[in-house]
Length: 282
Ligand code: ZN
Image (tube, rainbow, N blue to C red):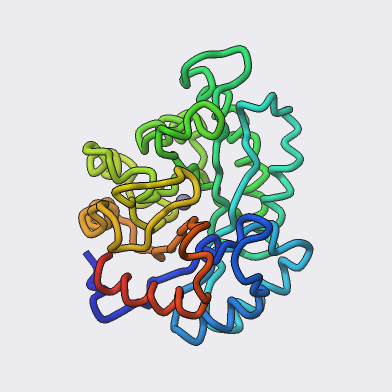
């Protein structure tokens, strides 16, 4: 396991941590301002959300690399199942195009929930696999990887049909494409006592990204009350040990949705605290 106690060169910012995933939150820093602030602190890279990139993907990607960092990822695909999605996947393909223009390492895929007219999750997972396979072929031509992110089971129904790493790997197996893997987010997997075995099955080729925050003991809003690392009850060091034992050696991206706390703090302070907590608690 890598020693980060005096080193945050693997630390990356997901701009959701500054409230950039939803209109009306955060301090509205431009991508350029975020890039400069992350570069000044020696970060490995940044994960952007589509809404802040707009039509400037090429310029933003170049600026990140000129600052000595990588575009670690792009959030996120539209839901691929659960909404009566058509098979043309035009919106998802546009997300792939944006990731390619940014030269992002991966596009995060949030599956969407249970398909209309079905029950449970297995049928939805099959339909998801069909659509991911179509999207993967398109993404492969553009050099983009797709990271399927299992979500905490409380998001089943309307947001996900992938509740565990095991679920996501099942879909990866169905798709069987070299540019399709998983994103491991501690918010979604911290409770799973079988996580280490699932991650070993995934192996280094399938683990495409690793997302950090913490699970607050008294979570007040399931979507928008994630904790800063060290403020909650997730065993962050054990999870990273398991992720790295499976072969992952990439960036660790901090992704904290926190409407009532961190999105109200001055962004520079949030970034500084991230560095301290990463070194101490992750
Ligand atoms: Zn995540």
